[in-house]
Image 1 (cartoon, protein in one colour):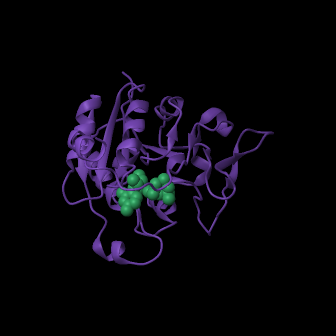
Image 2 (tube, rainbow, N blue to C red):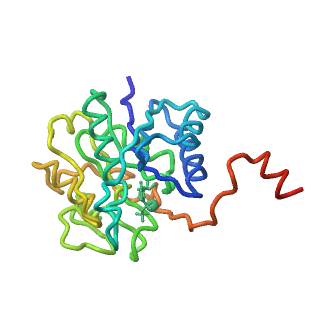
Image 3 (cartoon, protein in one colour):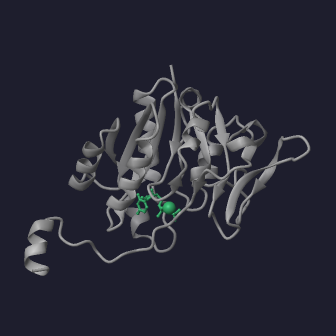
Length: 244
Ligand code: UDP
Ligand code: MN
């Protein structure tokens, strides 16, 4: 059979949310044997997300995990999506036996071929991410002479052992089961590095290179601009009162 792909997506309520999730759902409809693990940054599941997930008919799980209050209240960069990705790891440990998982944020742009690339991951795979940081690209660097991994390129290395973007790696479920303590830290900027370090023993030279040995960009770290709040959800009523 074909290995199952677990796409773990943190999401949160804002005017752009339904647009992001619609685009992502329609991308995932083109992928076979996929299970979408959607985890809201909230105490309880919301109606709009529940309805959207039911409507598209993808295999999915609708979970929640709120960012702890101490991080939400703090000024400056926040550990966005960390509580949810850790909830996703908990779900995988309890429910998945085989396959591969991918932390796929709701606002990125995915070429469907990345999902086929990911499927053959034995332990940890990586590939380029476009539109990422001031460098415009985050990627493993591969020797043109040998085709072997030689290092990382990223707009910000920051002393990280794995200076990669969240959208640039996937992990096998079996490998996760062999790492029962692996989790993501609440450290803005160091979420990827912290999680990948928690998979120890695992070294950068062991990375499985995807996307034609990291020569293709199949994922982009797109960001949607903030918009004005959505109109009321009861569109029929809104039309009558505001647009008549
Ligand atoms: N996110 C969240 N709660 C927040 C902010 C973001 O759950 O308070 C989610 C968001 O939906 C996305 C991920 O965390 O899937 C990363 O957030 P974002 O895309 O805003 O981060 P950036 O593009 O700046 O890395
Ligand atoms: Mn994003």
